[in-house]
Image: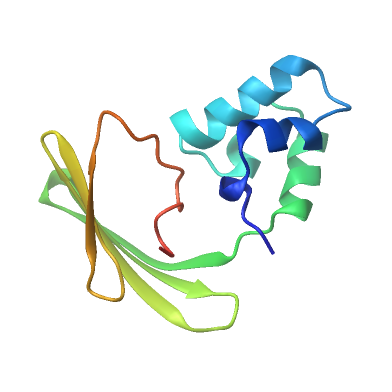
Length: 124
């Protein structure tokens, strides 16, 4: 099943054709700028949150979430749909964010230029 983070804004608009136009902006703001899970976006109605949560169930279960270095480093252990687990570490530095993936790859982004969804990078 596709993640909601795989949908472009135009594709999300197709899903919200029965909603007022501003709902798309509220959803996009909640997902990308505010980094909220669908169920946490309180600017959209409960009925829409429920519909989207049913259509896009979470494929990750957080088993552990540890912050260190005054919150600049976060470590998560996730359980995937198939039951396997992965560990992901996010390290914030001035001007960039580094995510260490389970395959020992690290990817850098300019923190100011890439809006990240809450779990968008956890399975990359």
